[in-house]
View 1 (tube, rainbow, N blue to C red):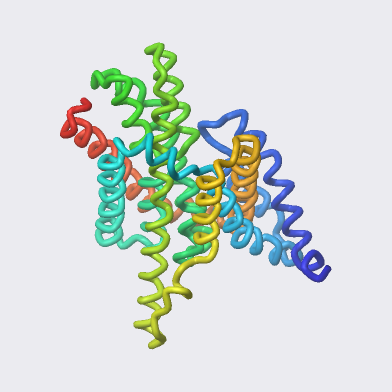
View 2 (view 1 turned 90 degrees about the vertical axis):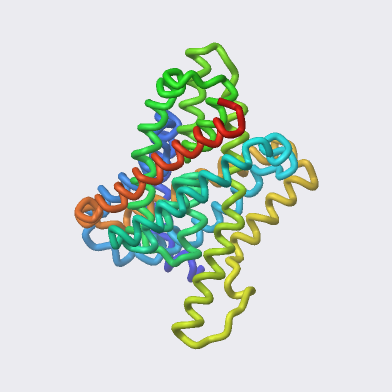
Length: 335
């Protein structure tokens, strides 16, 4: 009872923001519900000057609901099926992820960008956009403005990729298989991968959507090692500064463990689509709800003023990923 008394108002506000955002995301998938949710949240927070009664629930949503969303995301992953169908793309996926993380690190050094923003943009660009940011943010202790900024950067290049890549693929004379790999490895959000592959299929009367989606799902598995490595790094760094001993148990985020367990359960028990599909949809809605909380905690003026460095970082990661994806296809004899 005390929980609802403390958090109820903020939870309800986030829920009320999430519902129209979810519907708008369905209507305009290339933009997506999380982006609409952040924007609505930032607009509401300009109007709602006193958020004292809402703050506990908003903070709970941006942290705990976000982690819960990542756990439910695991139910959409049958590891056996994804790896069986996606193993051809693994060299390309590993190359593009490495490229994005290296570029993000270089830009962090050159531009003196906030380290959390650099990590989130690098991970979001290379793995799976908003889902990767949602999984990584709690591990590195990113604040709401850093999350909102990173999601916005990812959104910008998602939209550009969805619009430009089908024409670019045709200009480069990519095969249907080649474009499926290109879309699946060089576009970082599922909705934008779907939009680009669908546009390609419409132009070329092909069926690249399934292949692109499988490659994209294979990339998503990288959330597991990335979050574990970051957790260990942050824990060791904390040990060095505070003098405490390193503990793998303390370093490993429990919500990532539950994400892995959800994936294992789906794989071992071959859960049918009738079970996993609603859980995946719930995960998406909870991410939208958490993004609403993040928008409510974000100063839009500060976001715009400090946004150029993350945008430039995202642009360099995006170009690097696209180039390496095409280069690896050429090396492997696909293109």
